[in-house]
Amino acid sequence: MVKSEFAENATRKYSFIKIIMDSLQNRFKKQIAGILQKELNLKNPMAVPHLLKIAVNMGVKDALLDKKNLEKASIIMSNITGQKPKWTSAKKSISSFKLREGDKIGLAVTLRGRKMYDFFERLISVVLPRFRDFHGVKKNSFDGSGNYTLGFTESTVFPEIDPGEIDKIQGFEVSIVTTANNDKDGFALLKAMGMPFEK
Image 1 (cartoon, helix red, strand yellow):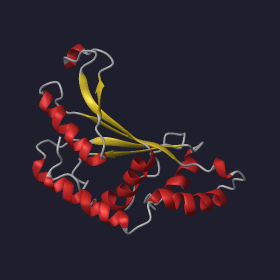
Image 2: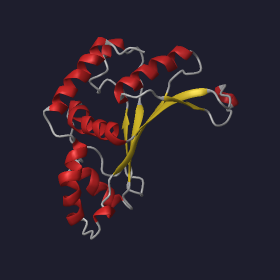
Image 3: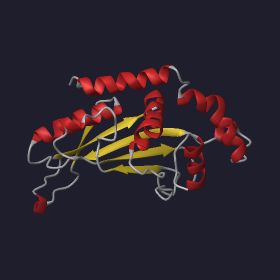
Image 4: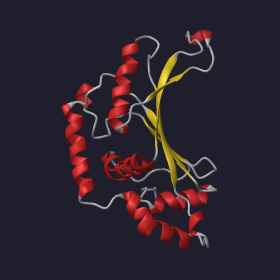
């Protein structure tokens, strides 16, 4: 699918910002990793925690009623992540919901490498500040193993999405998977990378 003109303009604007700034991936290698190593008192630089992947998951409303809802959600997900999503299917049948095993009910994208760092940078510097009365993200959304999940009730906080083209509000989750051994180290990693945690 071709991106809308609105999405293309937003992507171009963000790409220009990236040109005049050193990328987060480079800053992590040159500065942040060293700071983290000292903060966590690690002797081996290879033990410094880092981002492993970012998973974006969306359960699509009314996916079973009309396949067009899945197609529209797929376009939204592609614009947000810059990557074509994969379908997620029901793992078991639920008769009360008229759901059969194998029915397509959602979308998923896994970002790694440069795309992962670029998405994280856009998340903390562009998307989160767009929330009205934003005071930081919650500190208690770690999973016990150093991974962090953010829930979004709608997609229009991303500049690539034109609110005028959205006919259904669609929420999704962003899971940031790290190599940290625990939540303390995961928190230190994300904070050092610029995640705006609430005070």
